[in-house]
Length: 160
Ligand code: MG
Image (cartoon, rainbow, N blue to C red; front, side):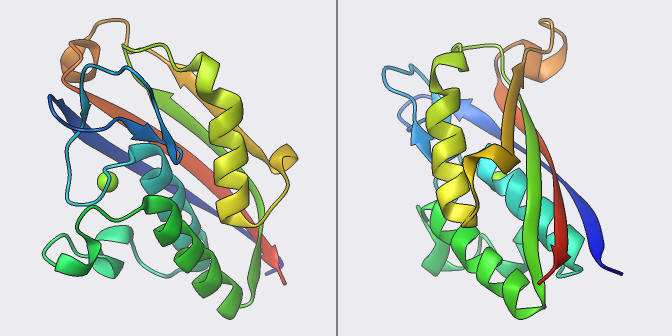
């Protein structure tokens, strides 16, 4: 097999007193941030799980357990770099990554370019093979009520 695909999904609750970090970019002025053991960057976590899935290397929870103090407040872009290294060691390089963030507020569009640039740097690929999309949940359900943010991602790997 010369190419493989993987999917990833993640969500985190929004809470006061936390930073809002998505795709490695801290959103300035956000009233609420994502709660979690690491920096709770749901977008980067979804990308990580897509890569791990494509490479057949399990999932983020098994690799970086939230019971391990090493990963407290971890910079998820650093975890992404670690995963890309593991994927490369398994004989794969990243083909492309596509992701969707489901978020009612704040508006994320102004930060898209920075997220793409930061994720591409973490992935070690050009920005042209990283795509980040935003949508709301049309005010339906917990995401729609602004209780949290979810992200989905796909990744393809090609034989290195
Ligand atoms: Mg997560």
